[in-house]
Image 1: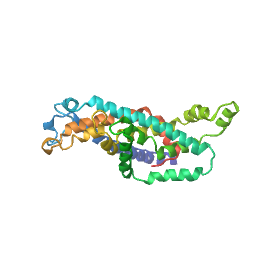
Image 2 (image 1 turned 90 degrees about the vertical axis):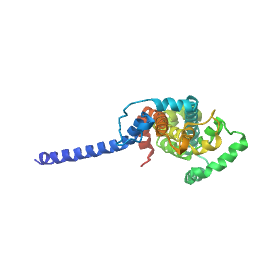
Image 3 (image 1 turned 135 degrees about the vertical axis):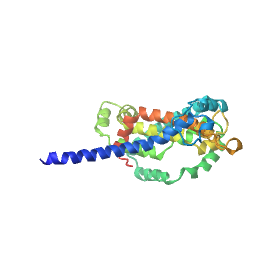
Image 4 (image 1 turned 30 degrees about the vertical axis):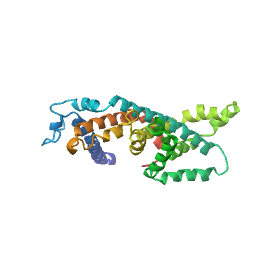
Length: 282
C-alpha cells in the first residue's frame, strides 16, 4: 500500500530531475551551438535581428577565409605537436616523481613533497617573466623547446598520480621483487598499467592546458613557424577599422574546441575513473 502511494510521487520527482538535467544540458550546449552557427554564417548575417540559430544561407566561407589569412595547417600542427609532447613529457616526469614520493622511502620525503605542493599556490602569471628571461638566456626563443619544456613539470600532476599510486596494494610489487624484477620494471610494467585511469585524467588535463596556453607562447614564440593556435586567433580581434569579424573568430574557436573534445571522448571512461579513484572532488 505504501509503495503504491509513494510511487507516483517518486515518478514526479524523477521526472522533475530529468527535466532539470535536460534544461542544464541545453544551457550548456547553447553557446557551442551558437558558436558553430556563427562560423557558418556570412559576415552580413551575423548581427541580423532577430538572430537565427540555423544559418540561412549556410556557408563555409569563414573557414576558407581563415585558411587564406594565415597558414592554418602549420599553426594547427604546431599546437598539436606542442600539446602532445607536453602531455607525454608531463606524464613521464609526474609519474616518476609520484613513484618516488609514494613508494621509495628517503629522508625528508614528506617535507619536500609539501614544499612541492606549495608551488601550486603561486599564480602562473607570476612565472611568465622569469620563464621568459630563462628561455631567452638559453637561446630557446621561437623554438618548440620554449613551448614544451616549461610545461613538463607540474605539481598537480605529481599529486594526482601519487594519490593513485598510494591506492595500489604493495602485494603486486612485492611479488614482482620476489620474481627478480627491478624497480624500473615494476614502475613501467606494473605501476603504470594499473593506474591508467589517473594517467588518462592527467593526459586530458595536460593536453587541454597546453592546447589553450596563450600568455607564455605569446612571449616566447612570435614567428609563424612555431606560433600556436590561441596566439594566432588573437590576431583576429579588432581587425580592419577596429571591427571584429566574428564569423572568423568563431570558425577558429570551433577548430580549437574539436581536438579537446576528441581527446576527452577517447579518454572519457578512464578520465571519470581517475577523478573518482584519486579522491579529487569538485
